[in-house]
Length: 437
Image (cartoon, rainbow, N blue to C red; front, side, top):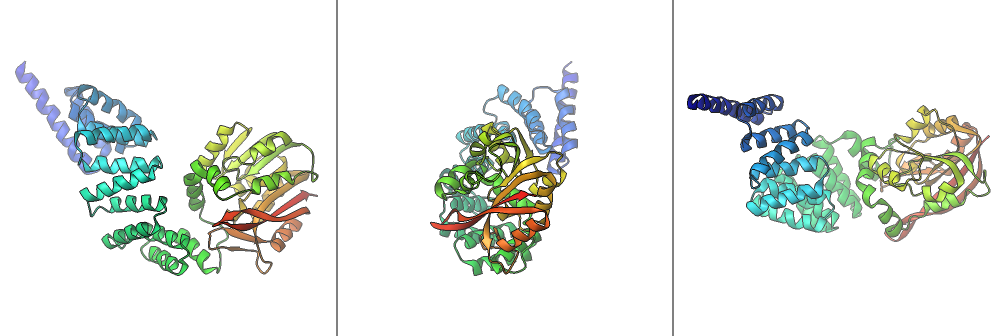
């Protein structure tokens, strides 16, 4: 019997060691099979449960990993690796506060455990706890002063805290460690642009391109700074990422900090143009749903479409939309089977550029006599649209009127009023109201 148990142990050990080798080689599917074989022979071994949990995380199965890691921790609540991997699994599931608690527990056991210090910094970033993140990354840099990831997170925290000089110094340190980090060149360039150092920003964006950065994205930024040959649209990933990141604080920052009022101006000036109430309205680029409370009493059915999933999540919480769709505005107008008697778009076309596809889609879905209204930032009539240094498009009145005439719209009202503020200066807005003939 003892001989049999020794044989089982040796076989389980060999599967375990083979799984470790496969894990280190990145052969995660094979490692899973090896660890499972080891557990079949010797169930309940903490190290094997922990390693299998880590493997499942690599395979994109955090929920399954969590079950195994919890089993390991039930056997030993102080199992350091299992506790650390549990934090990673929770983070992959979007449970950031719980993940942070896990990493804090790891650091109580071993204060200088660098993987847990690093993961703690990541969780503070996800939770928007920027001052704590700055302190945590400073500690990480004491432990690992040449870590590129640590310097990047430190720069990110300083940037979010608007400690611009310190953030630039951190980005520069990171680029000394590795000058080929195109993402860092782009981030540094964005910060320089925000500080009004456009010449330095342009040089940094060009460095990003030279080191293999995304040609469309960096080319878009370069075009905005040069003011020449603007692309007809921004990279979709840029717009989606911008508003996904902005979603949590969008309403508070836009309305309370930037004095945004375009949604109020656009909706309030609908009165007297079309009907008193509308059968069905589509909020193009609805975002978090700022227009919905103002519009809901005037429409029987209200739908929204937006490119940002996180923005749509915020809009969904309002409970005011009958339907919300995750899609590009122009593509949705070309594809939907629904028909409307009101289309509105508030401060959205500044992230679109060329509007031919929007107008052709609008006329497709709008019923005769229906209203199409929107706000833009104005450009002079010498050009159709141009890309500003703020990475937003401005459109000329001439261009918009020409598109409207081409697609059978009649302009019934136009207003020139501010949209919001930027550095305490009003940003001019143009509000246009068309009726489909």
